[in-house]
Image (cartoon, rainbow, N blue to C red):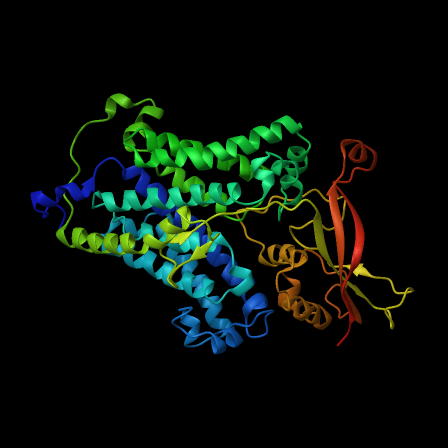
Length: 482
């Protein structure tokens, strides 16, 4: 029971981060609801029994110890749907604070169940779940499971683990850029990035056309934010609050200028959780209400369990820490299959040209010059030049993202399977698209072409109303039929 801890264990708890705990637990839970909703709506056509990269084939060649997952024992499309719906319900309960009203082990069990279910998805997700924010969500979910309930004080171990996570997230991203392409060192990266990023947003065109001097300021600001401010997390308050505030502001700018799924929102949640209760009270104009009352004592069982978990975190942190200082830094790497303490980073190099895969089909008997090809339109990626880039984040359009990597040379044997599903007019696959030009009917032929895209200039936009200019490069997959 709370209050049963011996005095010599009272140091384990802090009374300064009750707001931070609520922000962390509820914020991560909201992101989990989104992630599980995507499992329910996107997993089957991408990874199901008849998906582009079927899970049964993956688990048949990859042992459980390398990728532990519920689906290693049994897979069915119904089970994946149950995981998506069940995970969303569990995460939704934590988002509204229901488990937090019980004993410390109640939110722990709920959030650990979410962690196990989502880990099961990520570990078999292959290309469609090969993003750094998947491991980030797994790690954050495991972390917040041990922050306790409202009946317990916040453990110092949880506060330090959250700081260590944000430190690795920000510093890892900063170092991978500094060690990566020269465009980050000569301050030219943002001359291209707003245009060539995987999923531009509604304001990306405007950000791209800002003055060159502003792009230099953006890059310098990135270096200062990601290479300098994370070190404030190792100091006493209010320095961690300052570092967290800087993360919130800078990540907010990234939310406005791009679509990076829930990566920016996860960073915002972590940044807000760096702020102590005293700083929150000061910001709210009620500093006089802050007292120096000691935190209530934690239950002995909570102290013992969190101490054991903290020891595991400490041991597992060695390789990620060594990765940060080593000469061959890994980006978005997991050093153990449970994804408990990971390495992060993004965009060590910035592409200077934007090339897009365009999927087309025709009803013609032969795919010759007389054939009329019609384009399948995607939900988030650039397709028709006159369409403004949409705001889709924090939702993750996994097919759109995977297609962005195809022109960069990543293995994409699944692209031929995608074309076959279009030939079959597979309803689940077609639901991943924004528009099927054949209205659910089967085309006779399909193909994939590569186009080069660039933002219109201000003059071109005034003259045509278009956001993009595109030109064909080559036929990526020759016309094929069933």
